[in-house]
Image (cartoon, rainbow, N blue to C red; front, side):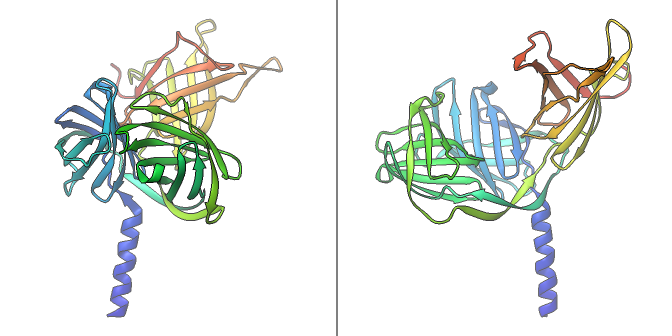
Length: 342
């Protein structure tokens, strides 16, 4: 009996850490179509033609987070409960800091074919949990992985945010003033203080919000997180996806690292040229330098940086390049996976 129980627990653990439900895709909802992207358990998206945005955390089949709409200049909280196969959800939303109570349901009409595979990795996260003296009285922060929540102004104020490196970005709400907005804190090297900014509603943070830690536990949190890569760009790409195009990408992918070879026909010499680049995915961004070419013993083509964006269904890559930090306005690439001649 004991042996069978151990086998059952091990089987459950492997199943649990091996895969995560993928909610990425397009949904028909009560507020027009919604497009969701997923990185690990964090989900972001747009709705109402891009005027609406969401930022949330997926726990089991429950998605909870915040929404904002630049068209109406309103924001609030929401929660979606997905069905067993994650093809639809029943949801609620509310304004500002109110408990969600208004209907917001949706059905998936387009899904990514890529399964969200999670690799368990041990990481060291900086610990921002503690009490801070800030421009708005004392603030108490709690941390769970890279998610940080907290209260300020005697509990009237609340924050919900994601920590990336030394940068904390999220939303705030205040039940006393019935106002909400966005904020960002930049912590110093030992995470004993931060310089910050906040803004109202959907405005870019610009008002001062600084703080100094006055009570803390330890300097770091050792935790086990789930690294998710719902990205699949392995293969050959071209403009319009046609085999006869003279501008091609070949991409190799291993975990969150990629290697890319860019090839095209030089319009002057009519000879194929190729550059190689490599890097790590930043969400759905690929930002990389190419290895410089050598011509007549001299290094050429320095200062170029390529910027690619992968679509949510992994079928389109758009991009441009910058030289010495300045974007070329005449170049906007649109690649699709190579198919038959079109």
